[in-house]
Length: 339
View (cartoon, rainbow, N blue to C red):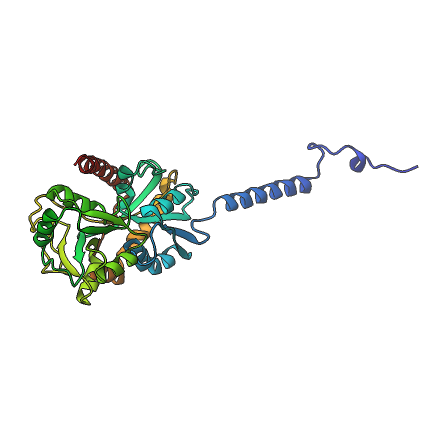
């Protein structure tokens, strides 16, 4: 017959648990909670960040973010990987980014085409205001540069417009897609001058530049940073800038206003977004990192050489800016499409 000690054989309950058992249970529970909390609240970022650029390598937004990544990586403590997803004037990459998680590990860096494209294309699968978390306006330029081949007979905007009026439909202009920074300036010029110039869409800016340089394309509105370097090499001729002010990188180049287009003032800008739904804390942290990178002397010098001005606009202000730009382009699109 087995012997049973009352303390050891009685059913185990909370009331008769040994003190060390209750202490151990409490300790293990506390450790489990701490581990769960640490997993859920890992500091951002703790893995590489993907930056979607909805245009090919070598374009303005690609160049800009690649200037910033060497400074952003040590600030954030994680690698930043640029992923170029070109197509349909930026629609493909932008639509892709909009569907990704708003966890801070998926960024969109693109141009003013973010707001410029939708009004000209009813099939755009995103809303530039509602479908994104607005982080910051990274930079802006002094406008686009109207360039022609070095062999062109056009020495001024007046020469070009005079020929276009006398030869409707004989001239072509290149663009990287509807609503892009190369499309809208050309359409506004056509609308204001009342001329017929045929638009031709390309898949990439390098392809356009190759055709302009060789004379296969009559004209193109390109970023000042690209125009200046190619003009210096004698590969293109710059006729005018679309911004309201001249740029020191092309000091002898007039603005479109100076060329006779009163009120003509278009600049290109470059922004950073996350998918809609990102937290304010996350947006603020990323904005702070970008502002710090923009303040780096090397970045400032690189931007200045490329005809860019770093901005670092606060998120709330940037959200209002995007909304205002979207409304402006919608109105401009209606005016252009009526004529």
